[in-house]
Image (cartoon, rainbow, N blue to C red):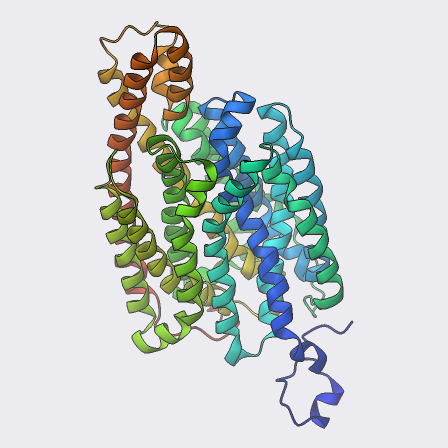
Length: 533
């Protein structure tokens, strides 16, 4: 099959200008986009779906707070760590083959995860799923940049980015649906038939493309990037549990720093660098990456908290909680495809400023929610946040991929994905850490005089999920009134923690507006415009 960089000899014989793209590929480009977007949503849903499923998994597998965090973050750790090498492999050997290989790994390990009998097994399966996801995600965006002509590329990327954001909200709904009728492992098992269908669709519809220059791989650069990103994400994940000043966390950050310096020095001198560090001199590339990082910090951290708020504080089932996050997905799907027109009218900087401003307003609103708050204010805040994210994420992603040559689109797409994963991992870790700190302090005060055994107190103070589990045992032993009092104390402590956490997140959104909103260019750079050092 011809690559998308190849010009078809028959292109000049047709009345339709295909802009140098194979006419057959050009004709089915929107079908290709549909398959790629479904592949993307499958990866994103695998992250967000666990936010609703984690309470059920905690109960069924007996996971503690650290294990429950790692069930979510093991995927992100491996995913972020191998994204750049995965993108480079796609550029070198073919992005379609990278996509197919990723789908196979993802599907097989989803089946293994669904049959896990312990938190450790599930964490391991999730980690290997991250390898599959790392092959899938950059391949989808890099293929899009190769099958769409320049004047349609931004619209296609906006659709891709919008569905990536919507997948974050669709995941909880999907989890709720399958958990209503099936066991907890069905959250993973449901991916298997979808992956089988996608493999067939990719095989017959999606064209292959790769770097036409045939440049050699960069093993040292790949190794340094894995060390840098893996150690960085590990430190971020372990920070809330072990303490940000602990030897493990500081050691991880030190390794990440050394790996980052080694990566920069090697890539600056390599004849065929995997990722040219000079790209970060381009404000479109660097500020686009920063905007995506801040956006996913806000979005993933928010879903992590809201899922617990809906299930524990308000007592909704997994399905009911998933349905109540759906407004954000609907708004994201509506706003994101229109972001190129919004950006063209308002300018990229205003688009980013307003987008982050809406996110900050939504977080401030969420900080007013209480134990007895109605649902409709939350629905409004979710829609406001989705509108803001839908405005800023697609143009920011377009800025990143437009800053690299088409021949390196796999690595450029991987950078876009790294920023998403780093932002999401940092968001969950930081917001989860703040929530846990305030919750523990508040809970300790509330149960100070309660007749709770000393051995149980650390469990109750660990998280709202474990406190509610203890409350169920308390109901059988000390009566329903004691259990209700414990649940009330836990809910109120959770609300105290969430108020502080949401205000901190609002500050992050304001910071994104001030930095990225003022420094990002108002128009996308030309492909491959790499400055001299």
